Image (cartoon, rainbow, N blue to C red; front, side, top):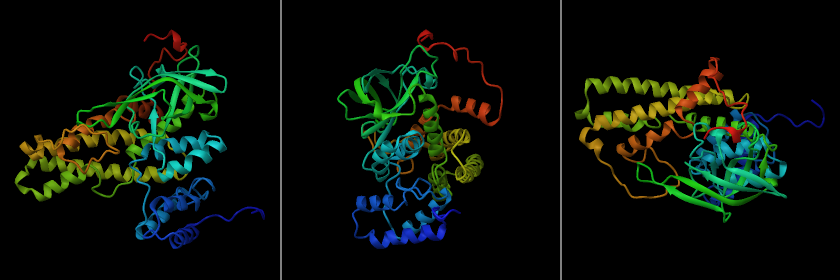
Length: 400
């Protein structure tokens, strides 16, 4: 090791730094936001990130040491479910493709939760085939002028910033004429409209962009290279949805298992066998998620996350269907149809009817199951790719 090289950060050092943070900023007497800012500045937000950006350039596996120390001290977290798009999608993309100025500007308030993010990707005519998007960004001096429509945008009604992909060159094939931007959701040209779902809530939105001016300094990656940048976002998105850390009997399997224990009058042989099967599958998925996170220690997320997201969607739909059936007539009841625009999705805090209806969206959001099956087939199993006749055709010449 050269004299200028810093010593490697190990578990002992991370634990020492965490205890220093707790001593200097006692959670019981420190303002929540002030504590989170101090944690970020101490490099204990995400330890595998660079020094100065909330990390210590340490192995990702050491994050669990930090989290355990802070949990034991009852320290506040950054409410990750509320800011999941920022944490799981925007942050790794900014880290991978952002300038130094962009990283310094956006990562700290993103992690602390001062600024909520949303994702302006899908469009009415470009959902499963995202690369067919039609939202245009036209260069005007130091700015880009953006016009178009996005749809199924979670948290757009709360967001300060958005990650946005738009077409910057219609003369190129669809994958090569896209650029990636950071969009200010407070711009007067941004119109957010609620999309009421089958649950009664308007958790999603459609977003209309009319003459939105985005400075070129808010572009991520080279002009025309937005599809490559977007792949980083999408791979991280699928890991964050399908590979989140949960305890045994966490998630959807928890409520139906508890109902089985509490209500012996509802049990049948058939539902017992189905519950056992789904319980085992849920546990396999949970352990597979743990293995996936361990693989992330050695690199970036790959197509394996698509497989996890596929399992997440299928299991949620099958488990919630079993729960409604197990409850019989009670399963047909629905607690509240009030139209609200929630800050987060709470699968386990609502009734069985809500879980059943909301889980229908799991096979659409974060990549449709059909698209993810293709990704797993081609990029995990190595099967031949489907014929794609439009790969080398200019976007403007495609049939729409």
